[in-house]
Amino acid sequence: MLNFLPPYSPELNPDELGNADLKHSLPRQYRARNQAELAAETRRFFRRRQRQPHIVRGYFGGPTVCYALGRNPMSF
Picture: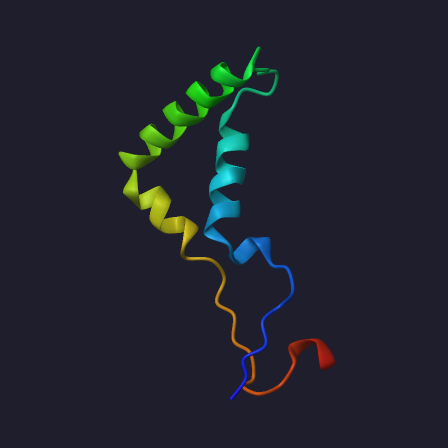
């Protein structure tokens, strides 16, 4: 039995959703002056998210995808 998945689907990837959340949370004009500042701001963001598990759970509750088993969804 084969299950074909889309070749690229960032909307289903929790890592991509976390990255998008990080990007949207920064002020529009925010520019880190160096790599250390960027790393510190990223850590601050994810530490805040650790105290907001309901938001993190949302990263894993993406749209429901149902593919016919054994068929390539790209062949429709």
